[in-house]
Length: 226
Image (cartoon, rainbow, N blue to C red):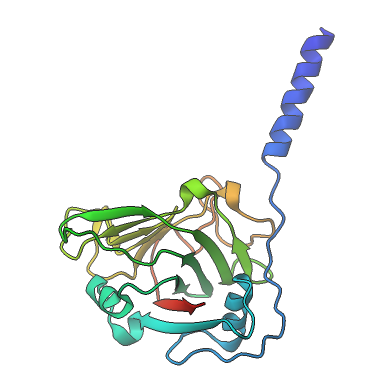
């Protein structure tokens, strides 16, 4: 009887440890005194928070390559403006929410424009507004860090671009959308730092755009100059 009771206690303790929230990986703003690059949608405070999340200082430079409101909303518009630049930061705006993802490997198109390219990349998330008390970095495990990129003519692929797990650009009901602002996003609750105050899904996942499927107000792609 004592053995059974001890096993039950260990099981409960193990469950509690496994579901404990991660400490918030809040970005510390250090008064970098830098100005946002031209053509960006980022405010001075958002830009400073972005640099801080990358461990940057005044020598770190970020240039804006593409904005949907300026350069067009199609997948081709994005590809034409971004090209093979890397590393990249993708910023998504929806209502009060500002968040995004860092991608070290850039956008690598398949050799066959009717196909797709699936490849590994350093990927991590960040929130600049609407989800935490402060700008916050969200790390994800290595097996979730990848890119799935459609060719320019890959109409059979479900979306234009998948960035890790889980941000999808240019997807509508399982098919490529006419514009990349049609998004799907969630962040697994297992990877979510504590302090999250944004919308959650059915399984407590973070819905950083306010819902799992949404139309972004703005998508911007920036290049990190290292």
